[in-house]
Length: 133
Image 1: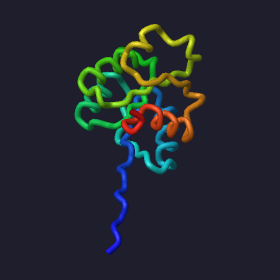
Image 2: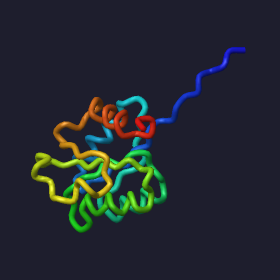
Image 3: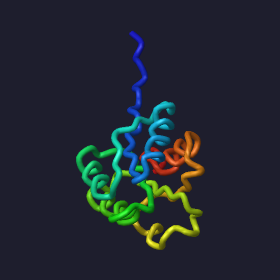
Image 4: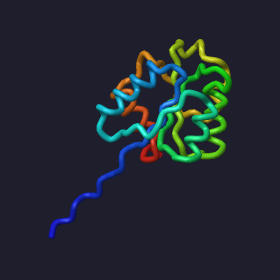
């Protein structure tokens, strides 16, 4: 009898952005990308923290600029309650324009929304996912 190689589970992703347009774009990218699946979406920091605690995604794609609790504070809170979750900050701004605090909030990376796509996502996971260490 031939043994079947163990299939690795898809990377479960939580998408967090106050703009429906980016959430929709991320949904399309994740739906077309093998090895990744959208677990849930959140439109605010507090909603993201609650979903991260409840669902324990592998990866959180997190907008930096959101009303109320911004992405930097949201990342800090997620990493405090679930340090195993990989958080990637995403911004429409050039990286130099992102508020200070992005470097020490626990996020694995900071990328521009304009650069977001399948190859970037695969590269981020290869670099920061659990198998990278």
